[in-house]
Image 1 (cartoon, one colour):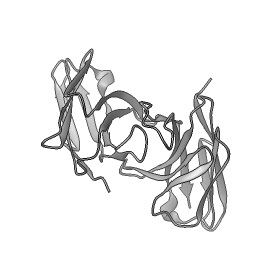
Image 2: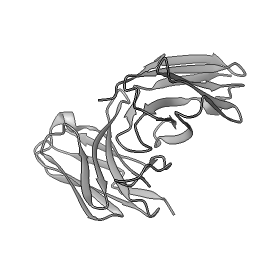
Image 3: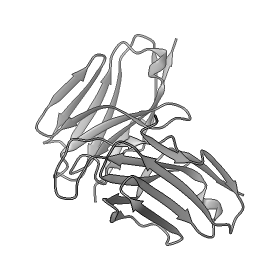
Image 4: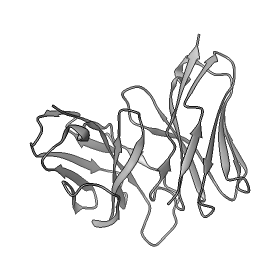
Length: 117
Length: 112
């Protein structure tokens, strides 16, 4: 029943590995996001997709590649993991459209705690 | 881009007292200001939001005020309870959801 679900919840891996985090929302929202929360709790947007189209791409290393197969899914693939990638990654969705101004807030998933050793 | 500053970074209050968190923003075009609460180990959840055409909004023990001229907005929690202990984030954007810029968070501890 979870509105925004992401897997896995925990991910422990070694430097240099490639890993993926999956996200799905069943709210019928048009827009999905990836946020990174570092050890100091700061929430920073990484990417945003609207109806499978990339609309926000913040200054993120190109080792991070989002993929949206449909508007209900937004996955995050990370290549060549580094120690500094350790963080909690939150997927989120909202009912915003690219052309309209709507009143929908962000709905976050439960987060994926990534630990790179 | 939008820059949101949030103060204080930590706040300890006695149960039953009020808590106030203040945020300032830089982009005068911002018109949507949500507040999120994040309990330990959990996801951020929206607790209240306000739009630029409104100066104040209240929901039970929580209220938010907005001063567009000064570009600051505040969260007020009255009659605090232990379950109010959490990290609170303010945010601002030009549209609901789009590229929300978050403040750095305030860790609120309610002492019993």
